[in-house]
Image (cartoon, rainbow, N blue to C red; front, side, top):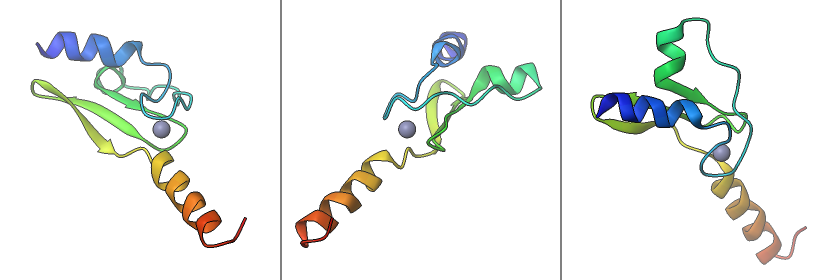
Length: 75
Ligand SMILES: [Zn+2]
């Protein structure tokens, strides 16, 4: 199944969590085929038979912080 995971990951041009654009692939073809990095700083990779998170997308945390600030009466 690893090839299917690599194929799927290689088609992702936007962060699956927040839609941020993908960062251009690394020079090494094998590295770029199994790793996807996005402008939000999220990164995913294929490890064994799964797509795993190497860096979680921070979008929801940023939104949560903003909402807490608003909730506390800030802007
Ligand atoms: Zn993201």
